[in-house]
Amino acid sequence: MCGIVGVAQNTPYSNVRWLKLARDTLIHRGPDHAGEWWSEDKRVGLAHRRLSIIDLSPSGNQPMHLNKQGLSIVFNGEIYNYIYLQNQLKSLGHTFKSKSDTEVILAAYVEWGYNCLKYLEGMFAFALYDSKQQEVFLARDRAGEKPLFYFMNKETLYFASELKALLSNPSLPRNIDPESFDCYLTMGFIPGERSILSGYKKLPPAHAMRFNIRNSKIDIWKYWELPEINNNNININKIKLVNHLELLLENAVKKQLVSDVPVGILLSGGLDSSLITAMAARTSNEVRTFSVGFPGKHKTDETYHARLIAEHFKTKHTEFQSVPDSAVNIMQKLAYQFDEPIIDSSMIPTFQINELISKKCKVVLGGDGGDELFGGYIHHSRIIWMYQNLGYIPNFIRNYISKFTKNYLPLNFKGETYLRNINLNLKHNLPIIACHFDLTTRRKLLGKYEQHPFVAESIHANRVSNQKDLLQRATRMDFENFLAEDCLVKIDRSSMLNSVEVRAPMLDRNMIEFAFSKVPSYLKTNSKEKKILLKLLASKILPKNFDKNRKQGFSIPINDWLKNGPLKDFFWDTLNSKNCIFDSKIVQDLFQGQDKRGFNGERLFALVQFELWKKAYGTIL
Image 1 (cartoon, rainbow, N blue to C red):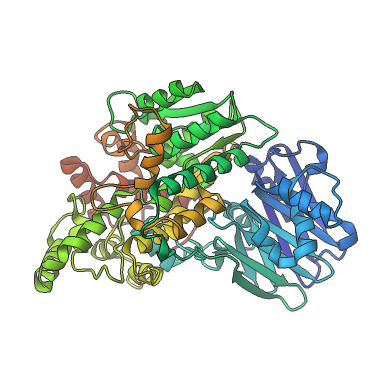
Image 2: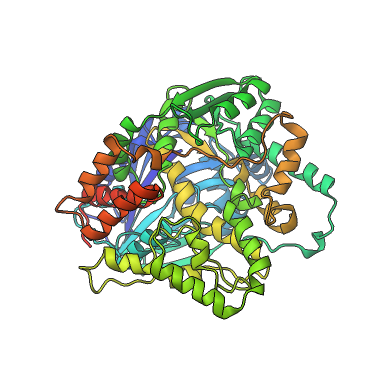
């Protein structure tokens, strides 16, 4: 795992000192080595911070070059099938100086050009300079595990793993993009290529880019798509499907345990991380597991369930206790670390568990992806129930309920999201499940910004796929949006701040393609049960007393923490400061609603997190 940064233009770049400064803003991503390289004509600069995981020797340092071919690369991530590819490339006449997966990417590009991407399995973001073609080639992995931001300023392309590296250049702007900000307040993240700052973009997952230095032209394309469901699998044999899943997951875990440093497992006690622990125990006799809990009897405390799995598979288990007193300092730290704010308070325990892990090992496996691949979110079951049952209610009644909810029910009313969307046509559309602030509330929150565009609902609607199957539509939406722009961002930034690499076996390419093309919806989720196929596998390999029906990750009891104490005081002071951009009356209403019903914790977190981020980066709306 590493951090990359670079610049390219069609004339010599004069501010060469900036590249080193930008590189070292990413020291947390790679404390083990720093590298910098400029082309002879000074038109291309590449820099790298290294976290040594594979081939710990200096031969794995970057930027890495194939001088004869005129190639240079900076790479962030892991290619899990690099040994297989290396052997295949050797049979084609290629030689290697290192045992690094970085060198495999270079050789794969020599052999297959841009098509090398279809051979790479792993998490990655890289920039490869081809001096003979006068092109910079950038690419990002299929799920979006590794980040890549870029900014095009006239004839100059800047790119980096994190936005803060680009913003270390004082000549670049830092104005908030209003449409992206509207998406943040609505969805909790900024989807697709958009960025919170105007002019900056993210290279989307499964996309590649080439920048022609001669004419300063950018070409972007999608090199991989989620596969279509095979409708011939409707009557598939369950036992065969479970066995196939077991084999794929075991192989994915086995590949991702390969490392030249110790590897652990993030064990929440939930279904996904428990299955991964079971598979790891088949490969290694020295499995390390880590979990986080909360003092007192909180429903978010999973230490008992994690301990059950750890004891069954005889892992070396470590537990960490999270307390609200530490949340204030962590939120301030993460506001800067997260290049774009996201509405997800579980970033706090995610950071804490990675801080603990950093004292024990550099690499851990996590359970991310299981919900998106196999239908694990509660809204999957709920929208199926809505589709099956609400069609019997006349349209005029559903329209009335929806309108009444929007106009009269408070934001923290339980079930408000589903009542608001009761009139939605689920044959083609999807509701915004975690709609943190509806259109009416956003207008009030930003009342003094009269020209602010409110476009999040239309942006969301345009990102819904055209799948006929409702669950296929929902899980694909979650995979391409919530997973990529919330879950994986949270994991990447929180782990990298502690110089820890988190790997996700559920996001192995073969796992993804299996889940979306081979598993029919009725074996994923119905109106009463979720993750049906994963639970069948759990019944086969997990302890008999394991509770398969729980849904829990590394989350915090934010609503309890905001009843009183230092976190509530911090939220109050932040949102009542003179520099707060949000309407004070709406802020007071949110606090009052929190005191009465206790469901506004995540909304208040959203506003505080944005205010902290705005201050950390000195941005302007």
